[in-house]
Each structure stands twice: as C-alpha cells, then as structure tokens.
Image (cartoon, rainbow, N blue to C red; front, side, top):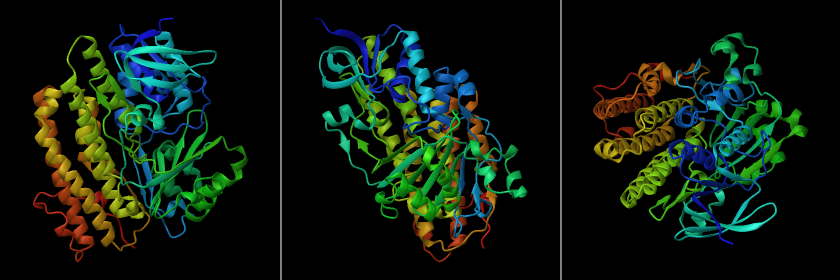
Length: 532
C-alpha cells in the first residue's frame, strides 16, 4: 500500500507544532499538513504543560498573526506584566519585600495561558481548517530523504507516511536533534520543578496593608507573572483561566541542589525554608495537587535548526534557554516564522540554501543573546538594586530590537536584517558587556535595601519603547532609523546604570569592567532604591 503523502509532516502536536500548522494554513492553504500528537485529546486543563506566561512577541504572534484574539480575551487571562518581590531576612511578610512591577496593565497586551485549554482549541481549529491531526499517535522512526519517511503508531494501526518537509516539534525529546547529533551542551546549570493547585493564589490577599495594596490598580497583582526572588532562585506564581494556579521553583544547581526540589514533598520543604509565606498557602491544599513535574539541567543548545534538505526543529526540539522572562513561546513564534518562510518559498521552487543558513545563524545568535541573560546570573536574583537595573536593561534591549523587528515583520526579511547587521553586532557586544558588568556590580554590592516599589516603565523612554511596538508599520528607512535611535539610547542607559553602580560601589574597580562615555548618561532616579 502506498504511504499517505503530505507537503509537511509535523512530529509533535504541542504548542509549537499546532501553532505552526495554523500559520501554514493561513499563509499557504494549498499545502497539505499532517500533525502527529502523542497525547490523547482533549488534554486536561491545568496539567503538566509548562510555559503558561506569554510576553510581547508570543502574545502578538498568538493574538494577531494567528488571529486568536477572541479566544485569548474570552478563555485566557490578560496578564498584568512581570512582577518581582525581592527577599527580606525571613520572607514572611510580602509588604516588607521590595516590589518591582507595573502599577497597571501595559498598553501592549500579553496573556496567561492554560496550556491544556489553549492546545485543545488549536487542535480543533486545525482539524476544522483541513489539517490532518492524529492524537495518541507516536513517531517511531524517521528516515530522511526524498521524500522523508515517517513511521507512526496510532490507536489501532502502524503505518508509514511521507512528507516533503519534516518538522520536529517533539519537545525536549528532540527527535531530530538526537538522530542527527545536533545537541550542544551549555554552561547554564539550573533546574526546575512545578505543580498546579486548583485555587486562585492571590498575592494581593497575603497582607491587609492598605498602602501596599493601593500601589497596584484594583488589587490585580495576582494577574501578573509573580516572581518571588532570592539568591540563586526564583519562584513563579501564574494564574490560569481554568481557575488553577501554576507554581514553579527554578534554581541554580550549585546553590539549591536538584534533590531539594525534585519531589513535591521536598519542594514544599524547600518553600518552607526559603519562601515560608508561599509555603503557608500551598501546604493546606497539598492533597488537591493536580500535577507535579521536575526537570534537571533544562537548558540545552543545538547546532542547527533549519536545513535546505527540508527539515526544521521548532520549540524545545531545538535549543532552550530559561523560563525567566518567559521566552519559550517567543522562540516558538520566531522559529515558526522562519520555518513557514522556508516552506512556502521552497514550495514555489525557490532555492532556499542560503536563506536556511541565514535563518539558522539568526535564530541561534538570538538564542545565544538570551542565554547570556541567565548564564552565571542566578546569584544576582536576590539583589534588589542590581536586579531592578538588570530587569530594566533586559526589557529595554528586548523592546528596542528583537520585539520591534518581530512586530514590524522584518525578522525574515533578509535584505533588511542585512542592512542593520553592523548596528545589531554593536548592540550584541554592548548587551554582553552589560551582563558581565551587572554580575561584577552584584559581587561588589554589600547594601541592604528597604521595602518599596518601582516600575520599569517609570522611566519614560522604557514606557515608550514598549508602547511603540504597537505602532503602524514602518518603511525600511524609518525602521532602520528607529533601531539606530533605540541602540543609541541603550548606550546612554548603560552609562546611567554604570554611574549608579559606581556611586553605590565606588571602590570596587567597576570602571575597569565597563568603559562608557557618561556625559549623556540617563538619570536612573526612578530605579534608585533606598538603602537601609
């Protein structure tokens, strides 16, 4: 019997695979698409999946590029930004912790996703649009060639299908990454565990302090991705549209060994020691635990993600950095965008060899830039002043370049990205030097900071950078000038951070770590924390 033949076979029907299938149907409806998903559907809500928090790139991708605004607004939760609570000696009173976060919803929306609910919707929508999606379907063997041959095992039969393109969306299993020996080890050594409880965990209710509650509109802090910060770790609290709350511990292995958090009882013990106010919320509901998973050494690299031989790796099947700043879905959005471009062009007879190499380099360079945000940086997590500047800097970089180019639909425009290559190279060097400087500042900083409140967007230019993502499309010249202006401002911002650090640690030799012209340094008044 002749195998079923498709233009695109997607091995994996999680978030990456299902969103790619939808994007293909929207941009190239003439192509036939098959998705093999190992899990049974409909999936449970609030269970097992991680990556529930979106930020600007992924939110725009889901909301606008994939036309899912209706579902996001009615079935998921709009997010009140990213929020951080820095440590006190005992972490028992949240109002005594320094808080960094927005006082109101930002102008550019993002969302908290119940992944089960979201992926159930995507699977049904894909089937309705003509995508062949089989759940409870495992890929058991892949033979790359002309065409690719994929053996699958379903509910009642085993068979072979053929695809002109093969897309690995198999997640951390990394079907092609392992087969083709594409793994690359990275130096970021952190672990995570996470679980869901069937209740709303509202940090707004952790205190009755009226002045603390009034800082944020309508006591909506619980709609943020809340981070409880400490030396070498952070804990996430993410509300889900189904009514549950996702709670996760992410920690540097040298400071908080994996064995401390790899079972639920151990994770609760760990919370009791480092985040006792959170433990007081979790422990009474331990018997209603919905799920628990742990992951060791979650960061991994990958030597190639796109090939002119008509295969690609998307989502966690390729490289993965860290869940801090919630970049996982961003990489799905960017990776899917590159993949769709290659598939569509190749289907029209275009030679994609050079383009595949360029996309591969671009994606992996972006991965490397994001990895620098986390690698060797976990010791800073408990330092309120340095982390406030780091969060502001990291967000400013993201809004100034990467998110801007995605919103303006230019990441896959090789002519345009080539025209700003020198600017981006200069920016990447500054970004890497700033991460080194922030780590050196932390090591020299011995101050204790008072309880208080700050917001990244209290710096007017940062507020503008985020808001400008939603502006009308710019032509090449205007966008090139916007990138140039943004990077010039980032240099002034870096000089402002350097000036503040030298004031706080004047004898630490920090001027040797980063040399910048301070004449036009940005005043960081809104981000200057009061010292005890």
